[in-house]
Image 1 (cartoon, rainbow, N blue to C red):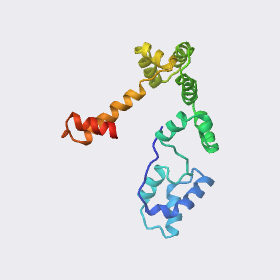
Image 2 (cartoon, one colour):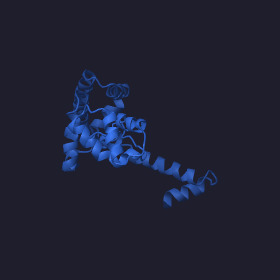
Image 3 (cartoon, one colour):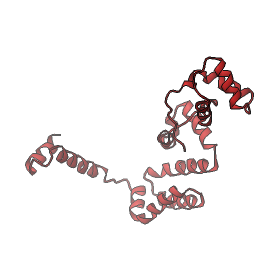
Image 4 (tube, rainbow, N blue to C red):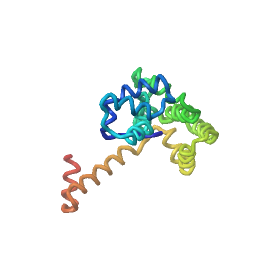
Length: 196
């Protein structure tokens, strides 16, 4: 996944539409011909600037780009919470290559396991076997991590109990202690925790 390039303004930007139209008509048109055409349209830059502009792909048709963060958010969002255009974008992106199809199906198959159910331990085993069959090294690493602590993962996926509230209190206590820069003792920390 490539990030969207951000370019500074260029003298060639004013002739972008002309260059795009000419390259759409004849993709093999020499750069020197394009340079002469835009020179006649009052272009003041040099040939090297035009070469750089074209080599960066800026004269081609606009392609929609998506950041890795946005793609991850779309992949991890529940399908019923996605808007219609996000569904279309997800369908286009997952159809782009076999790895994306495997990644999307792996995520879709793992998501139901997060709701505690007694059969989730067996479903997790099947999911790990499925992921190992795919050529996705990052998912392999995730699956290895799940297997390393399999007892805790099985408990989290099958039992209705959670230590989330306890972890939340720990995080809140540490945040309060950091805000006080270590200047207060236990009594003030206790007071702020109970009141906050």
